[in-house]
Image 1 (cartoon, one colour):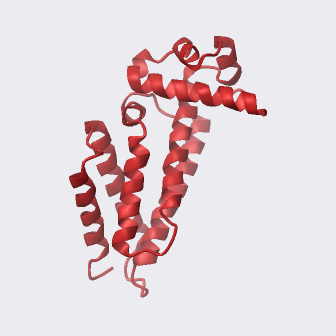
Image 2: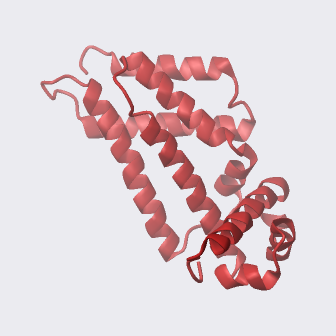
Length: 198
């Protein structure tokens, strides 16, 4: 961002711009995404938009960071309370489905169409990935054997990759709401974590 909003009105303007940008990106894809279109939908002047976002890539990065924050908020929420393994896995899977269902078309465009990260957005992405992976490490550590026979870090990496792959594939195909998909993903994770050597 060109400058950080300091007052409530400025924050509301930035939020409206990000929300409008997310809608346009989801509806029209990267090819139809313009700052003029975003300003129109947000109900602000193009000058107001440029006051905060110097170009459309910086706006897309703000949209991507907002998405990261939504995913992390869901993951933080799954840590609450004492639960059995199956209850915890169900909370994790449901949370990831919800986070990616908020705007599945936006998620698909961010994954498949938007150009890669620049230096500052790479740092934000790396910070997101670090917390994302830490969540899975904590999750695995809470259900693994106390003798440490399994490599919790590798298990966490495999688990996060499996969940992410299934969720992203389902988002692309428009089947995130499938109860069968959810149930099979829960069964797969539980079977993996209940294996004898874990």
